[in-house]
Image (cartoon, rainbow, N blue to C red; front, side, top):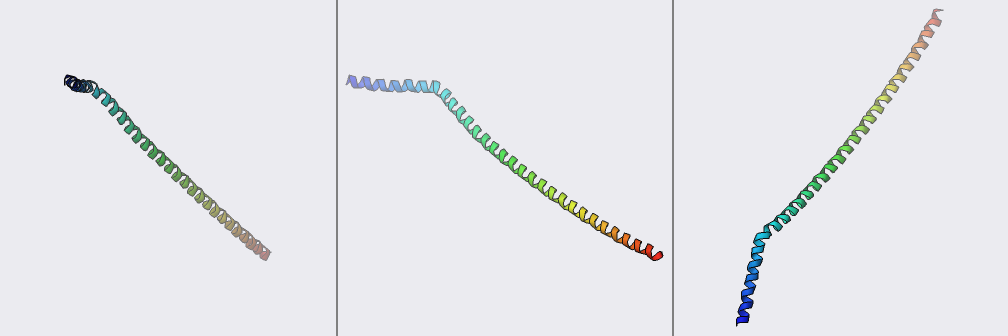
Length: 108
């Protein structure tokens, strides 16, 4: 009987000691865990934000490139139009020269 009692009485005491220790030191360990978890969550969030930022940056860069291409195309079109206008003007001048030279010949 006594051996059983001593075993039983020793077990709860160990439990109590463990509980006291847990009460004394547990919060510190828990705080560490909480801190670690908080850091992990923050890191995850930051990574997500970084990814989003990167994606945004990439998208912005792509849009800028497209705008530049459009501007270049517009400039090329304008240059072509100017060249066509110049050619037309040259043709008109040549025709005028022909008519004026013809008039001069008629006068003579």
